[in-house]
Length: 421
Image (cartoon, rainbow, N blue to C red; front, side, top):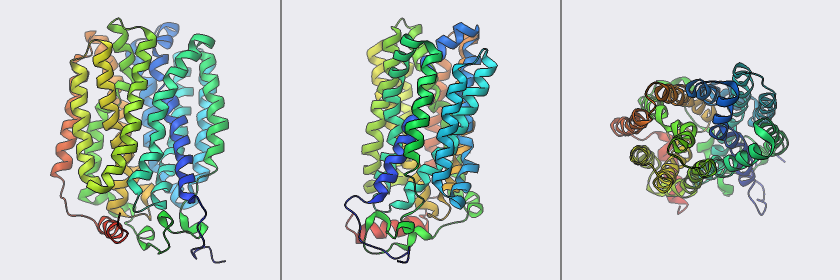
């Protein structure tokens, strides 16, 4: 049988298995990364380090796992997403295992920052890029499900890490997370496949072929476009503030005399909101317009960070964490689908990889800058206000970007109308 010839679709369209694999990768990869706030006090105490210098561990990891997409994305387009995803999960597990044996903060930088950073960087963009190719009509929903792993990981992993730290110490906790990444993450990564044509299917499992998947802009042409430049600038600026809560919400709560167990649960509340945002806002974006939805996500994150600036007790912080999580989750879900709409599927992983370098620089600077600002002023007021402002500015950039739709976006909308989506 010709692999390009559509054949009878099984009961469960294989694209959903690709989504499940991407979910597992984001759950374990980013879930492990976002446990860092639970480890911060332990590392600060054991190594006698400042909050800013310990925060830099996460910032370096974030810079790598977003920045590496510029390499892993094109490699996935050329050699396949599965190989990159498996390598990423192995690197993540090895990095966490080495972090458990670190004897000083420099070794934590080397093990955690490189292991988690390179691991997530190898796996994330290839896995998410593969999902975009398997769907057209339900791309926003499928993308939302795939990256919902980040939200569920943020919900589950920080409390798990806190439990493991209490039971085994921070070294034992990192070792358990390493085993999970290697066994569960590596196993699920084997389910990743690049596109439906390789199995003789069409996107969404439809009987009629959708040629939009094979078309698309080159990476060089895409990054020169006004569309891409606007997206890049917005994501760069917003990222200075978006990842500050993931590192500093728990220490902020502890500074306001909230118990450690309750403080760790605030990260889980972000995860609850994030999961809801990825599930529901991704699906809503398919109907109301993914570009318009992206603008809404930036505004929502900015407003929610303003709530944080006014919060001091556990209930107001929980409200902030949930609202922020909803819009953060929606942003992560909608962004890859918007890229696919603008530039088509041929080089989508490569284009997403280049775009995520913007997030890498923001992640590198934002959380560590907030930590050093706290070291100087013993207050998070300025970093929180600045974080809110960056997202409002990002929304303005998106709103002012020329709004002429790309050919890929128009094609997808036409497919949706024909299919009754």
